[in-house]
Image (cartoon, rainbow, N blue to C red):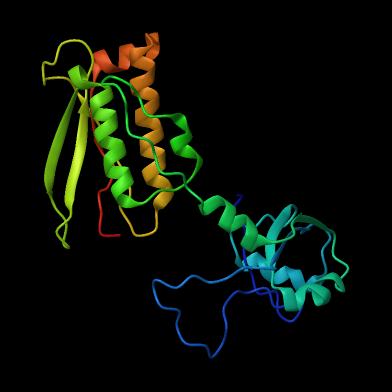
Length: 228
């Protein structure tokens, strides 16, 4: 799902998902976007009221923005007669479909990499920990499990060291780490994907990956902040 910018284009239309006067949503509760429609709106030659978007430095004034419109504002939004393209009729349905994750299957063989289908969705923390154990098991002769310390809430901060050729422990170091701040979930999968590609490339004899592994030691800490 593409990142959707939710804006308040007042007085044109109330697009914001915030609800004035409402109690703060508890941490574990989920906000429903059922019925929200996602539109791409051209910002080129747009009405003068859209000029206020210049306060958002990431918005291209001669391109487009993507907005999520709540069900009770769809008719008002359409009455603005903007140049739009409907991208999705139900944002809530799209979010639910994306959040459905299959339980990752356990490895059946040592030296076997996990399935690439892992990257099709987000996963629970415990499943991520198991995924890194599976990566370690898939590369047993060229990897070392590292227990670095404990987080504020007592979770283990772990890492994986990878190398190629002879393990001299004297090579220059490449350090990757992810999930440094709360809610940066995509960084976890990004580090996992890069690590997967490294191991898979080395095992399949990719010359570029082999050259990197022979020249550097890779230290990878996927959960720098496991409490987040």
